Length: 500
Image (cartoon, rainbow, N blue to C red; front, side, top):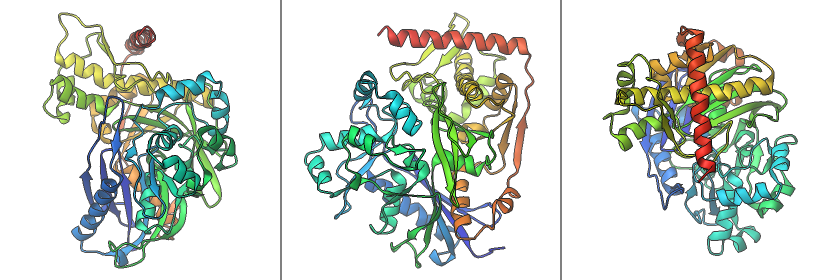
């Protein structure tokens, strides 16, 4: 047992940076979290300050270590997990960003995405990358910076600029520019990476006008990338595990067998199924993505992304004002036996999988004189579960296997009413683990395996424990009526977006 050695996981998310220190049992020994500024220059645009991402991450590293009186000598390895698709471009010499980070939620390149679709590029891109054409992914954001920041295109052509997703930026800062690298899972989200031969794709780079000199080296998810060179640590600590946040959560949930599925209920919802050693190119508008690479063995996943999940509860609080804090939503929703025929399609930033309607906007249907705030709150929670059901149905068609169980994590997985309704509408068991920090835990496991902190997967499997299991209890007739009502609400939402 490593009693005085730990694994440090950096969990760099969309709204905050976190540092979590895990012990050899996979338990949280210390953690710290710091929010950073969300920048909205105009509607549809979302940015972060890359320097603030780094400074917030550095400060929580120091805070977490200080809270248990350790320093770099006690850290056996660092794992990094991050908000995916977010783009940072910086000067290779000075290390200064040329523009703010353009966040995954940003929609400024939607028009260019439409142009690509109209140009017949969708199938080529899908076959190479496993992705659909959408402003969500990195490639169109990089192109936007090169086209719109003065001098950026010229500097890029001269080999003077570097691109990275947030993991790459943190690695660059931790190693003081010595390592410019990413892992296969993050690379697979850029729309520039061929997921079959695991390399940057020349045809895609040419299509988007992106010089290859900008791109990081692609490594496996569990290996030593390099060593820290910052004054944060009194020791050169190995950076040894990297994965995008949703792939890290899949690993942290120990969904390591083909067909196993997890859903993370965060700002959005991200449902991933382990699809084994070959990608499944979806026929149902899901994404094929690289889950991880360990010891030369690549694992793929099918993914469905829901853009608005937990953030619908924030809207009930901040936009509608029917709750004072997010934690109140469960009690309010539970004060009525059902939604009273109300359906809430929370397409507040478009509809993700399996619809991919970037122009859709949210809708509440079935309102009557008897509708109360409680019915709307309940319909909002049920909307999260319905969206998850739509993706599960698409996954089952693509993979040809039935869902056995759903492992859940993320903030909203603590909402028992939502989890019970999720089990009811899916007709399958929903399992919440004891350690819900599964994203950070996945990054820690990847790093720990690389440095020998944990011996092997069997060693890690012993640590996973369920906190609560939700079994379906609603009648089939009741759920069938609910599903039909939801399908009609989605149909109306899509119809209204196409008529605008």
